[in-house]
Length: 485
Image 1 (tube, rainbow, N blue to C red):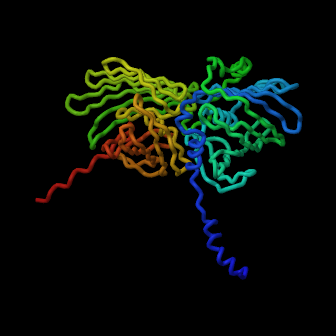
Image 2: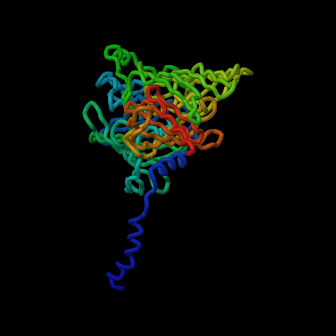
Image 3: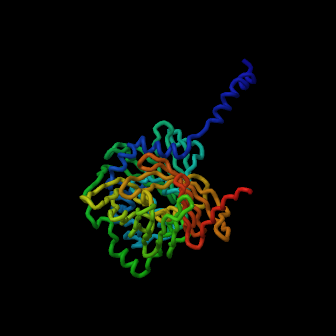
């Protein structure tokens, strides 16, 4: 056959190959969770200890490495190199640091701190939706003998990370990025191989790191899951504490909203079918390394049915990792009290409804948004504070309905638009959030927030409920036209 004729016959095949659609990044990332063991297997793990050996390739320098990790974002790496000594680095969930006999002790700040806190996230593959603002499939590439999909992850702070997932196995085999260090920006590459099942999950046991013209290989010898770690394992070393006293650390810049410090509260009036239903007053304060939401309210559900919300309070660290929550209310004379503590990926609830108190434990993400199933509405301010205005792509947040269960919330930023109130029109950012309640009922919420991520208006269309911030009064419903005589 003539070569030109052969080219025409094969052209449709070439076109089909060129037009092959790539899987979405979320499909690739979620598939990695499944092939390595599945969500349930990850959620059973609260900490782990890895021990192994390392070698600086071609230099004859060897050492031992031990890595401790614990939920939600604590870690400690100890490297002991023959003839050089000990190198340590870690995170207590707030402060990130490193020290060595060569360079002494130092505290990481800025982008370097943000990178380290993200690296310290335990069970990180489960939380990619909250760790990164954007994930995109950027094409395909060969990594040694692996044909891979390239996924570019853009974090909330820091430079993009490109990850390479084997098309056949779904396993991560390579990761590249540029890291900010005291020596400037340095390109880094990590190769992952020799996956073995440990504690119910597949994990790489051979890791090759390349950076600044150097290459060192880590071979993991053992992995201990849910180890009995001492309470002070991740405490800051004394010389790091001394540095903190000399130079107090600024609040972490790892935050989505602009209102990184100070107060963001107010007073909401809640309407149902155009009639006042409830009033809520609250504060949302970010200071002293914590985010604290606290408020109260009251509602009249018609007739003699009244609800007194004595308190709904949520406390988290500056990276939105939950510490505690308290909900205290009365429906008539019936008390409804839930006191919740958060640790190791779990919410432990002490519940009292006037009968026998009970304890309920739920598995949740450490940085979930905590709300009540109905009123009050102001806890959704935490979601408004964390939504990014920089992307129109869906953003996903875990939402914990206190004392009930965690659900997944999909948030879409729709842009800025004029919103009418009584006597004025204001340009606000429009956000929609959708999900399914633990009962199986789907729900959609609408939010309008200002440039500081402060909640100004909220609506639950299926329930005909609206809420308005003080100073932004609801526009009166037009009176029906009078019939002509």
